[in-house]
Length: 163
Image (cartoon, rainbow, N blue to C red; front, side, top):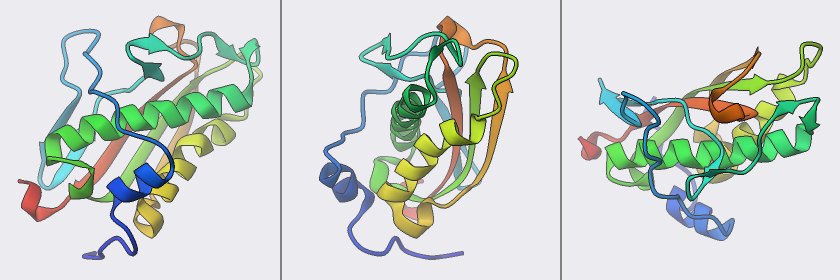
């Protein structure tokens, strides 16, 4: 599919939302934040950090609300976009969002993972319009690094000019 993003470029949409891409987070272990292959960029798991500090800690359903976790997912997806943009040469070289995987640490009976993941999915739609639509998995887990409530991975298609 060779669609162009209708309307303003993603960088302008981001600015209109009052948002900026953060610096790429330093990896916590032996991995890279993002890597490109065959015209796509794959990110490592991204946490909801701002300037290196988690915005929320704990499990959804025990100290973290669904709304707080959805907001954390928005922050984590900005971190993922920053990592992807570092591979493409900027957010405007991201042609479309392909896949989003959201891991949600919750109490055993928590089943609202899709609502948490919507925080990230909806922001991608706001930034990329129709090309922000993506396939997605929302997975419940027992725990995440640093006791984060959310971690996510992103796959994007890069424009040919970015490689």
